[in-house]
Length: 350
Image (cartoon, rainbow, N blue to C red):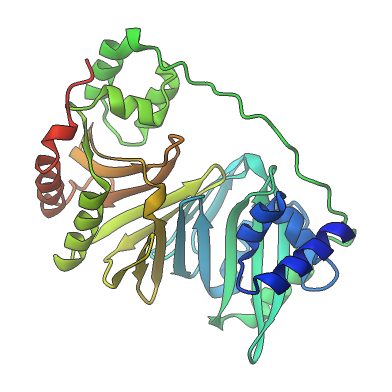
């Protein structure tokens, strides 16, 4: 254990008692996993890195809160882990409530955490990537299966409790963003048959996601303002629309499908505060927003994609749909309303 770091965190907590661990880690210039590791032997226990096996046993935890976040957005969904399957380095949890796309390649650390709170303890399983950044967290609720938590704790806690520091890696950019192939790229885009094929399209042409939307601007993508994006969310709520909201990081994508009802701006945060679903979005980190159209076998599928100033995808939003079923016409019409409000933002790239 890093005793010096432990002491620094204790001193910082005295100065700022409400500071969250992620923000404390930034303040101390370490990763969140390194900071949590200073609690090993007290409120935290290191887990075996057998993440695939852990995931297929998560149903036994019962009703929980699943949390996935990136630098600009937190996505919290309550429910039960169902239909969990693992295929090599990818995994799925496909339930009505908790819906996940999991990429295990970067997962490195897991912790069981038991923090004191009023009338007991707050239990959680927390997972981090090679850089020590949070990938996914599972929190116990009042309706969780206590026996299931105890079982997974006993099965997956690592007896050695030896923590190795994260690997500091320079992320190598793989995209070339070559403007010479824009016409071919747009032609290939026009021939898409499934939204999931878009990632393969980006990989084939070595385009970053944000660059691809820039080059398709005015044809398949349409830039809108942050204010109009937030208005679109509010209008989706007023019209009682079922939507899909995706938030992710390199190791996880978490999806909410359903309505969004209690929407509350609080300073830079735009929040959804529903009983089963919470979203916390830092609007001051939003650099660009696009409405994006993709052709599929089931007709056009329209989404909203939100990016930060480094070109990282913060959030995606769709109308509720499933393969084989066209998207909601009401969602499509709503997206057109906000597209037309932003015509001045959409000169053609080519």
